Image (cartoon, rainbow, N blue to C red; front, side, top):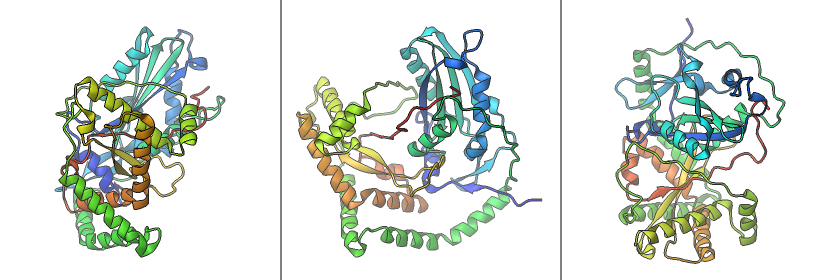
Amino acid sequence: MSRYQYERLSVQDNDFLVWETPALPMHGAGTNIFEAGCLRNEHGGIDFEAIKRLTESVLHLIPRYRQKLVWIPGEDHAVWVDDDHFNLDYHFRHTSLPRPGTDEQLRLLTARLMEHPLDRSRPLWETWVVEGLERDRFATVNKFHHCMIDGASGVNLFQLLLSRTPDRETREVRRFIPRPTPSPRDLRNDEWIRKLTTPLWLGRQLVDFVRESRDGAGDLPRRASSLVGLGRRKLFPVSETPINGKIGPHRVIEWTEMPFADVKAMREALGCTVNDVVLTVVTGAIRKLMLSRQIEPGKLEFRVSTPVNVRRARKGETSGNHVSSWIVRLPLGVECPLEQLKAIRAATVDLKDSNEASVIKMLVTVASMLGMSVQNLSVGTMNTIVTNVPGPAFPLYMLG
């Protein structure tokens, strides 16, 4: 008999399971809209089976799609094991909008799908093929638990499912042989061994943290300054605003489009980053919202968390979270967009120089390993999250 096989979730991945509540499901989704093209069938619908076969043909490249969670006995920590009862039909769903379906109806459907937690007894993903969209289009809504992927790995995953050219053919489906699952006793024994080596692991994390300093000892004062800044944000919490409060189970999803060429033109003309432009747009929107609620924005201490990709080069990686964050104060009291951008640019340059993302990542990891609640530690430090995930800079196709 082969020895059992499993993968222990990283501290960061596991946190997304621990933080989840019925009103706060910790999954994400991507809604993709396609021209029907050659996937239109003889009845005017969409060839659902062809799309499902396409996904089945790349499952061997996406291990998490056929793995489920098993919890370590006596621990609030999970491991990935192969699902020996994997059934693709459970994860692949087919539905339709009332024809001709509008983008607004698609948004409402996406919101309803996002309100329902994923089944933790199965692999944590779903794909919904939605036909009936007006102008001869269809959509897919791909739903993944955050413990599986972050934004960057999600983009890589989509590029596996889709192709750069319209003439891609479905590959041969490879046979799936599940690896042996550990018994509860096996997991418990392995966990005790891991705990005995935790001090060594913490020491190694500290050594890596120091080694990552760009100029050795000269970088340590900047990191120490970051620690002081993080402590100050905890001591002086953000303001209460209308967008902060008790979270309910329902969701509203909106999207809009703007030419990326315009964003790049602003970046080049103003000598900043795309992220700076995004944060400036958000600043203007939040300021406008506060004014509409008769709130003086200049009196608010309003901060956002902006996720930062801290993974080392892993080309094509399709699983796991490798993100930290910056905490950025938005200048809501400033009316001029150019002045807003100037203030944001100064803040992000300072955050980059101090390598705050690395400091936060280390603190979150150590706190979780010591059994401290990262959620409680972060209360009061931010009002909301603004994430900017760059997608592929080329067109993508699904079977033409």
